[in-house]
Length: 116
Length: 115
Image (cartoon, rainbow over all chains, first blue to last red; front, side):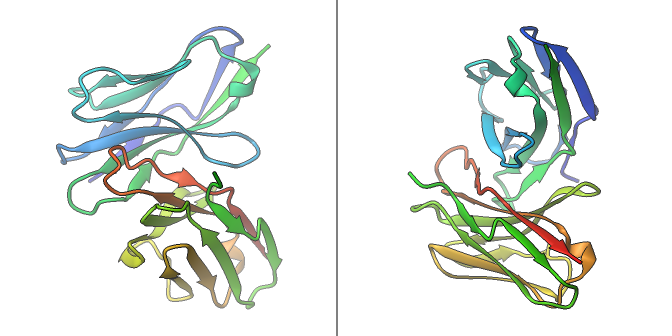
C-alpha cells in the first residue's frame, strides 16, 4: 500500500536554528516523486521542494533541503536558519508515476512552531 | 500569472441545501484535482481530471458528491444534499502532466460550513 508517515505531530525550534521534519514513505513503484508543502495559518498550500526517485542529489531550494535516503524510504525536510514566518503545518506528499498517475498522497502533517 | 482560482472562499449553508464549489485551474495545466481537508482525516483526494476527463473518483465519499469539468478552464464540485459532516476546506489544484515533477499548484481553498 502507498503511504506517507509523518511521526512528529508538533515540533518546536528556536529562531535561527535548523530543524528536521521527518517523512517516511511506502511504495512499490520505482518511479515516484516526493514533495513538501507548507500550510500557514491562512490556509493556503505552498509548494516548497521536490525530489524525484531517480535524482541522485538531494534537492535544495534556498533554506529548504530534502534529505533523501532511498534505501530507508525517507525524505526528511531540513529548514536551516529558522524564521518566525516558518511557523506552519508542513505536509510531505508522494506522487507515483506508474499506474494511477496524478494521485498525490499526503501525510498527516507536522506543526512547526518557531520560538523567538 | 494568476494561480488557481476558487470560489467562493467561504460558504455557510444549512443541511439539505445544494452547494457548488468552483475552480479555475492555471492556464495550460491539463490535470485538475479536488481535495478535502479536515482535522480528523487530513488531506484527501476526492477526484482528479486529466484533459477534462475524470480519471479517479474513488475518493468521492458518496453519491451526494459530483464533479464536472466541462472545459479546460473550469470545474465544479457539487454536494447535494449537504450534511454537517461535509464541513471542511475544499482545495482545488492543477498541474501540467509531463512537466517533470508534476508539481501541483493549490488554490486558496473554500471553507465550507454546513449547519
